[in-house]
Length: 450
Image (cartoon, one colour):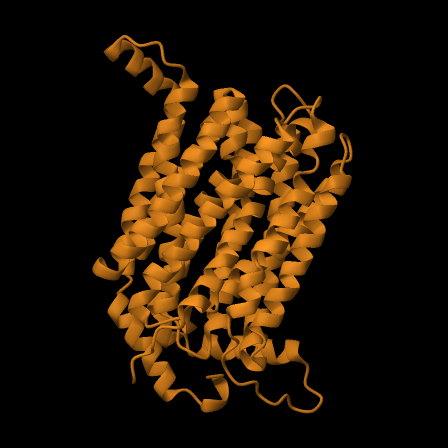
């Protein structure tokens, strides 16, 4: 097979800008501001906020479960109709609208907030799979590591910019500041709306739409294509093992994304300036991790890079869990009076370096193992695995913290990352790439869109 050429630089930049744009949603709504606003102000069941945490878990889990059902079918339809860009645009508009409407939820209106979070997070999360399906079009398999890393790196810079402006102009999360901080929804929506424009200007729709048989529905065609892929799964056993590993890893990652700043507020008891500094620290280290490990991946391989990032996660989770003990140890060894909230920043450095690099590595590795002509469908499976993991992880942590409290429930993440390492060990990158090429050579042409 001929070597695929690298896409034009502006198209790669346009693709990466969607990561820049949508990270504003992740950080402002899920991680830094709205999650805390929802649990402490809108629900407000002090002192331990267990009901707020549980409702937050349920809202995110339902939205991710919707992605699990819809993503593979949408991916198959997009491959068949060469309509990835149209599907991406639809998810983008729905995210913007539902996020802006979060302004309507007031203290006590938790049901309104839950419904809007479900809709906006579903649209955002399914859009992640849609944009990822363009990755195999942007260059040869060896280049996917740094291209994916560029996207994640720009994403964390985008998140840093969006959240810095939000914190500067909107202030802290408190009941007294509610009339101002409620604008976080419209602000996140506007940021996404404007900064994703380069994606739709420069990213190309490749492939050739196939003629729909008379009387056949696109949903039926999508389901049939998924069944065909399952019947050919013998070609893709390395991808199958990877998706199992992704399930465990993403379960842990989604827990950290959804609960890390809630953990800092409820367990560590940090001050507002430390919360802001933690955010900046995580964003910078995540961007550096994504770009740095993306470059490393091109030299040592995607699988090895992925395993290294999972090991970093183990260290990060241990540091989060043992922050109080580490604080006492540092005080005794060095005679300093550091508070736990400052020691917690060290865990933030480890988590940040792991966060961008691990997600970038999995996206690139799926791209390496995916045959052309099934990119949207296979990234649909990736999205399904990731979001099913989110349902499992967030509901699991929500249930555990209900019984034992959030401080000890974080250990659940440690188990998940250990399982992620164990299940990725059988993956052979070269064998998986050869399998993808074999499918491209042997598959019936009417199953391919390029």
